[in-house]
Length: 287
Image 1: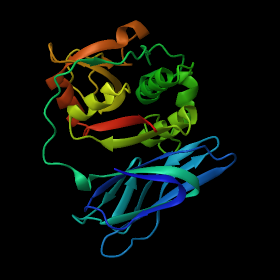
Image 2: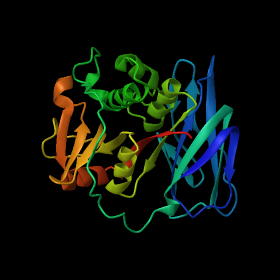
Image 3: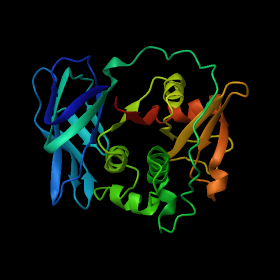
Image 4: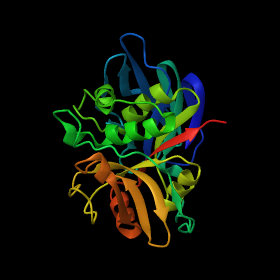
């Protein structure tokens, strides 16, 4: 994971070889109109610039584009044809703090499983109880707004939050980086938020010990879940009980706020999480 200060251009020209990249950013929205976020990578030479995201005052869009051996599809940039990149450059139309995940520094094995109990009291929030015609599609903004509520102790309207993260390019609400870009509007400059693929549950546990929940993407089956989650689902990890081997979650797919506090067996949870490549939304308070 690579982090930048507030800048319009961020370059790393010597990194471990990678084939996948996710770019997150923190900073204020454009006051008017729309701005672009662009990326190119270094293979044998620098590729052409490709637009990663369009982010604006009132709406945003991700893209399905390809330039040579580089393809962008929604949240992900991929290097194709078995090639690997060794550097990247990101630029934007305004200063932002960039957070760039690449899969070039993945470890061979995760850390040992934790033994310390932990619980972070995130209030329940059901997407199914929201007054929105597409409430079934709102797992990501519901989970994210629940965490932002917890971290700020402020009232955050999850329906308004959802409308601000809607990806107009694909007509979806679950674009990972748009959800975290919007969370930055509420958390302000004292917080960093980003998307990455973690190595294992021990990394979630370390975040929980710091008092910050972690949002993850899972795909079912997940025994005890509200729905099959066959196409993916976002939920909040809020704790771990090593005695029972259970992961505490705030799962917004349950029909009421009170029912969203559930426990999943660790093995079942990790299996469902791994089906989505161990994607996580990270929230980190700056020193």
